[in-house]
Every structure is written in C-alpha cells, then in structure tokens.
Image (cartoon, rainbow, N blue to C red):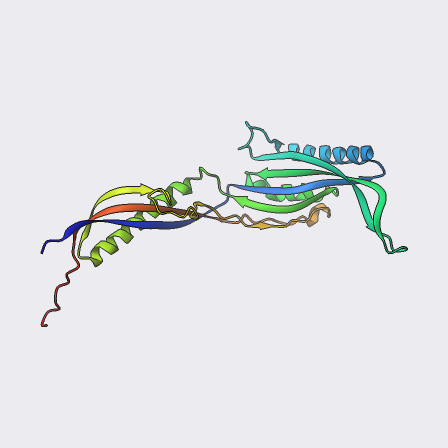
Length: 242
C-alpha cells in the first residue's frame, strides 16, 4: 500500500550566547538643602560636574542621532520632596524642614572598554547613587541571524524525525512563521534577550571603584514550521523471521 502526503506542523527553538552590546547604568543624583530652590541648584551643580566627567571620557547627551555613540547620558526626570527623619527625642517620624531634589539619570555604555574608567569617575561623585546595571544585546546584533537560522534547522530536524517515524520523508516546506502566525498560538511565546543586572554602589574613593564584568546575553529564537511529508504510512513491516 502506497503512503500518502500529510502536513506536519512543528516548532523549532534555538539559543545562542553572545557578548553584550551595551551596559545601561540607572541611578539618581540627590541633594538635600533648606529650601527647594537651594536643593535644585545643588542637584544641578552635581549633574553638571558628572556630565563634565562623562564628556571627558567622550560621552554625549542622548539624542536621536547619538543612540549608538560609545557613551551617552540622559537626565530624564527631576523631582523634589520634603525630607523626613526619625526624631530620637520624640520617637516620631516627621519632616526635618529640609527639601531633597533628585535627578534620575541613565548612562549607556557601548564601548565596554570604558567600564573601568567610567566606574572610577562615577565613584568620585558623592551625590550619585547607582541603582542598577543591566546588559543588553542590540535588536540587530548579527547573532540574531544565526540563532533564527538555527531555529529553522531545528524545526526541519524535528519534522524529519516525525516523518521518519511514519516511514515517510519531508518533501516540501509549506510555511515558516513566528509563533502564533500559523494559527492556534497562545501569544505567549517570544523571541528576545536575557538581561542580568547588578547593583553598583558609588560615593566612595576613586580607587575603590568596582570592576564590572560584561554579562553574556542569551538570544532565543522560536519559530513555527509546516512541512509536507510524503510516503507516510501507519503500516509497519513485520520483523524478519516472524
């Protein structure tokens, strides 16, 4: 009995580890003074001092035309609030009469050989507190091409396994698609990078600056494929000698 042609739908997944393209340092400059105006002036002065040091390393303010520069910064928001403290005499938590001004800052490093020098610069600024350092792979990192191709090859290998188990073979590619586009997808599958982060404290002496090690990024590609398998049969030959 001749086999028949059937459609086979499979998913292919691949992972690839690549060096990060950038490090993103998130932090804030803070200044506390007796009035809002004084606090804002102090924060502005501290920000100017920091950005001058960043400029000395080749840094520039982030803009639409500087996103891929080796070192950029963005002071993207500012706020003020009354300072509160615990009064040891009364046991109450209340306002001190001071005002704290904070400026949220993001520094992006694409020239990772600048990390040691940058760490030394940042640690010298007492008003700066770094909350997080995260690592990223660009959307156009060449590794994406390789991992997507590997996902397709994984789908082909899986399809061949299925066809062989049914005494057939793959004969045509019908569709290659992102997850969910062939129908029946739950929308929860993704293709992305993993990003690990760490906290980096600042405000110490320059020579005590921590050394940051770039964290490798894992690229993941997941695709759906539909193949035609020919010669498929559910009939198995009897073992020799039976």
